[in-house]
Image 1 (cartoon, helix red, strand yellow):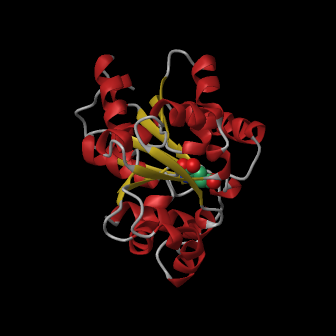
Image 2 (tube, rainbow, N blue to C red):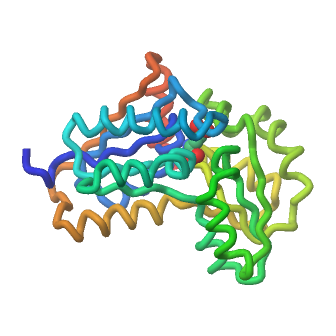
Image 3 (spheres, helix red, strand yellow):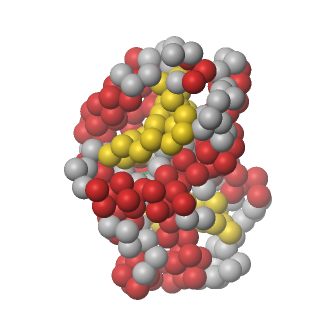
Length: 255
Ligand code: DGL
């Protein structure tokens, strides 16, 4: 097959990367997308760096075997743990990794107070610490780990009383006090209505989905690899559970 019509592969530990896929499809409707959610192994955010590296390589290899022209790591946790190693091992592949949108927040709210919600592995990562060091002169940064939220999103319970009860003790103390919150895990945009309700309308929620889509488009354009064909979206999951594929389709259709 013509390489231009090969898939753009998009991968996450589970259903969260669908929040990035939505931006990619909107921006590049003529592309063929191959989404892979590793829901059988989610969550990644509470695993060790070595475990996430191993899982990320296994998924990347499965995707590369299906004919792809780019790999989008639509998982902040896998990006923090493995994107540099993936680039080293596959120097000819376009590999784009999502990372918490701290730059976007610092640019939009100079001298502001910015919260970063992310998984424990991302919060502890050197990659995030470097990002924070780079922007900490420009804004106050508060880390807000949200353990348990990924599991609820995987169970289709992103917006419900249960997610509100989980998040209320973490977020209610910051209500009305933050200019922006960076959603540094691709599962979290699906819980945005609950996060917004707890923090109040004066807090702007930001995520890296659109920036990642833009970067992917740029990288493909540089290599003249953008397609003009009929778009397609294939969804695969490591979980042998039709409910997960149904959830992916539902999240993709929701706005
Ligand atoms: N969606 C992933 C992220 O962006 C990780 C969720 C998890 O498996 O812990 O970080």
